[in-house]
Each structure stands twice: as structure tokens, then as C-alpha cells.
Image (cartoon, rainbow, N blue to C red):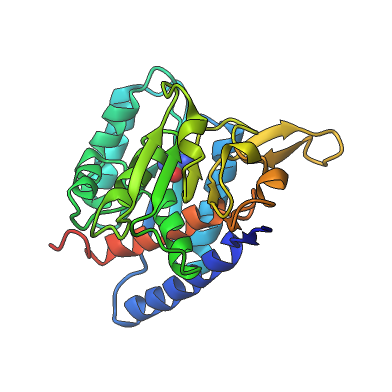
Amino acid sequence: MTAKLIDGNLVAALVRDQIRNDVRDWVGQGNRPPFLQVVQVGNDPASSTYIRAKTRACEDVGIETATAHLPDTVSALELKQQIQGFNESDAVDGILVQLPLPDHLSQHDVIESIDYRKDVDGFHPMNVGRLAVDQPTFRSCTPAGILELFRHYSIPTKSKHAVVVGASNIVGSPMAIILSRENASGKATTTICHKYTRDITRHTIDADILIVAAGQPGLIKAEMVKEGVVVIDVGINRIADETSEKGYRLVGDCDFEGLKEKASWITPVPGGVGPMTVAMLMKNTLLAAKHSIYPR
Ligand code: GUN
């Protein structure tokens, strides 16, 4: 079998077209444009790249945005005071603190200090909890984007065996929740593998849908899956490459060349899941501006 390609750039462009229209309608009804406040602590180059992509996407769909740059020496108190100001501002609809944070800051404390009604990343325990009990919520952007890819390509999840490799709070864990729940449109039998899993292949070999978010290049190889599997590669790893202008190239967590001969569907890296994450952030920001999840 040769896999069909899941084109994240294409689907993200369609989602963004829809959001651009919705933003135009919203503003046409006399509302101000949605506003996303980004917070960057320090200047990690990968974080700066992600923020640039998010800023450009905002401009593309008519969402206004600003980034507050704080030094990597900022204290927890100063950071939380900044966030409190954004929580209280009627001009701010969505707040995104780019992760990772420097070691002296507690990610959990910082995320919890964001007003959950403005938590467009879907990382606040209130939103994660509502996801787990099938209530309307801000869904974490990468899992929501993957679900949108399934919807676009009519890839069913109901009653399938979905295996998620990686249990991060950002991707693996919310992905497994969404896949397993009824209203979140997953309805799949879901297995979650993580660093304590003894024999990953025992699980991946039985997957109808395999979602890999482990941050380990080349982790999943063709001999670890069955014919016809749907492969979603969330990994974005920088590999040194002197032939490239930037000095590196991006690879996923899966051996794309080997897996594409066996899978029914597969996402490329780049151009698979990545653009969907940004598109779903735009969607969440519009939902926040409209108070759709938490009506006033
Ligand atoms: N760092 C890596 N991915 C993400 C994301 O989706 N949101 C935020 N805030 N930080 C990240």
C-alpha cells in the first residue's frame, strides 16, 4: 500500500478562510476585531519561530495581536502581574504564554494564572477538565487540528483502535482524551504509550490510527505498524544539515519513507500537523472573542 498524503497546509488554509469570513462578519456586526495577547519569556529561537507563525496567521485572518517580551530572568510574581493585567483588560480576548518557560518558573502556576475564559491554548486545568467530561471547552490546538484533519479527509475514528505515543499536557494527553470521548467526536478505543511503556511495538502494531508526539526522530519504523494504519506525526525535530541554508532541517518522529509504503494515510513533516495547530489557535481566539464557550 502507498499512503495518501494528509495535506495540513491545504486544510489549514481552508480553516483560515472560514475564520477570515467569520471575523469579517463579527466586525461587520459592530464588534472590535478579536485580540490575541502573546507572552514570550526569554528568546528561545524555536519559540520565536512559532510566535512569528502565529502572528502572521492572525494578520492573515484579521485577528489583532501583540507580543509582550519579558526577559528570561523575570520573576514569577512579575510574570503573573502581567498576565493579571491581560486577564482584566476588556481589550484582550485570548492569552497565550509560549512554552517552554525558563526552569525557575512553574509552568502549572503560570498557566493557572491565566483566566480560563481567555485560555486559547486550552491548557488551563478548567479547560482540560471540561474536555475530560465532554463539556464545551477550549481544546488544545494540536489535537483539535488533528481531529479537523480526520474530518476533512473523512477518516473515521469511531470504534477504531487509536494509539497515542507521548503523554504531554500539550498534545498526547488531550489527544487521548478527545479520541476516547463520545461528544469530542473520537469514540475510539484509545491506548496511550509513554516513556514507561515496556514494549511500544506491542501497542503500535495493533493501531488503526497512530498519533506520535514523542519528540524523538525516527522513533516509529515501518515494522512497528500494520498495513493500512493512519499515521499522524506530530514531531518537529531540528536535525543538523549542512546542505540546508539554515543549517538544519525538520523531521518528525516517524520514518516517513518506510511508513508511507505501509500506511493508508500519513502526514508529512513539515506541512502536516504544524499548520493545523496555528489554524486552531485562530479558531479558539475567535471563540474567546465571541464568548462562545463561556457566555457572559
Ligand atoms: N510550545 C510548543 N507548543 C506550544 C503551544 O501549542 N502553545 C504554547 N503556548 N506553547 C507551545
